[in-house]
Image 1: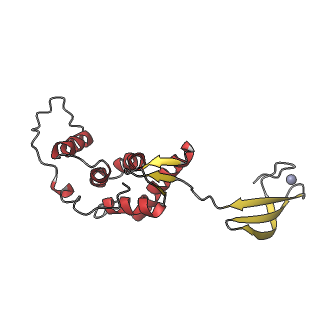
Image 2: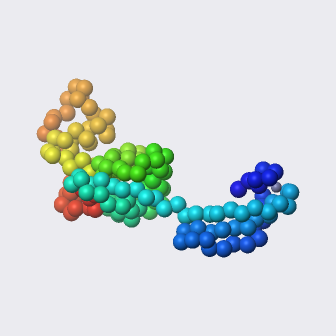
Image 3: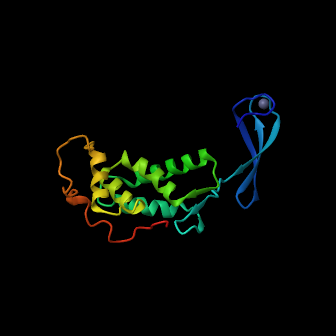
Length: 178
Ligand SMILES: [Zn+2]
């Protein structure tokens, strides 16, 4: 917080007072010019609506996104801290866009893009929920796109099964925002 008079960086807090539900008023004194000024600190409350597949809207909650990501990351090497970082990165991206609403699909895709760099098993699990693969072929295509085995003559059979570690992850319904 720069001094509004001399732009010095350091100021001393003389007094703090709650100024509202999410805000604190602080009386400060500049360390350089000794003039006094007041700042208000507000907790940023993300007011974002998620548009579900049904078309209904619900408030975005970090807990819900975190739960979905955590579920996808269970029994992987992904740490709780990495999940927190991922959720925060998603929120930062949404905040940077400045939108008031996001579709559940779009939200899922943003998380997915970040999960892809973190853990491939978690990525495929999460994708299976958000993209709702219609067929095993869709699923296999996604796996191939991960391993760089596209359709460019890799000689792999289309009937190849996905790796065992990613099977059986779609039976429970992880916190699907749709
Ligand atoms: Zn000053």
